[in-house]
Image 1 (cartoon, rainbow, N blue to C red):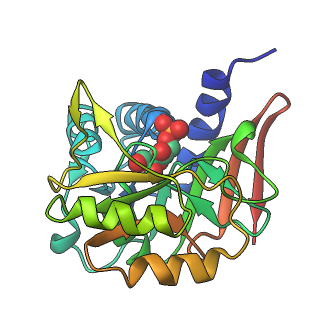
Image 2: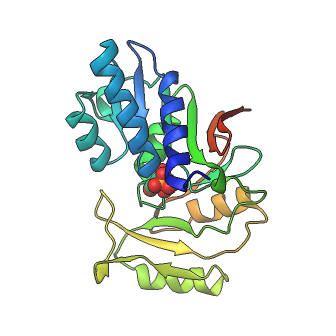
Length: 226
Ligand SMILES: O=C[C@H](O)[C@H](O)[C@H](O)COP(=O)(O)O
């Protein structure tokens, strides 16, 4: 029986095949993406493959640069040929929840500027309906008590994310409110509602953005395409 970490590695290494010489590639964030970066680092060393990486977090930028990748910011490129990223939950339509690591705002910016997107997940992340994983929402710190109250009144069970005894901070210096929803019956309505709330920077619902999911399973990598 392979561990969850081994399944993440299977997905990350398989997805590295999607990257071709000369591409501009959006690089996601998280523990599964770390395996993708390791695999790409090996291809750089062994095969001399060259691509430009557009990272979705400072963590990914630092790790990619350490592995010899050319790193550019989103503002320095026109478009990305593909973005490969992790996800916290993926449903049968390849919609998902992201932001478990608090990186969803940069991730969504990079994804929406990419020609195609692929997610890499272990099989435990595949669900019939989104919402068991708490939905991360990046918000401005200013006024967040009011916003949290509003989210609570709506029945969304908001919890302000903490780290090391203080508030968790995103790469933009904002904070994260995790919505404990249980099930998301109407994801499109919820996405619109959250996007329209003043103080919300970005939420972790990624709808109709991704065409491919590479799943690490006990039987190897499975690629599902829309
Ligand atoms: O903010 C973090 C990202 O959305 C990650 O891609 C997501 O949380 C999945 O991370 P992991 O591969 O570590 O489970």
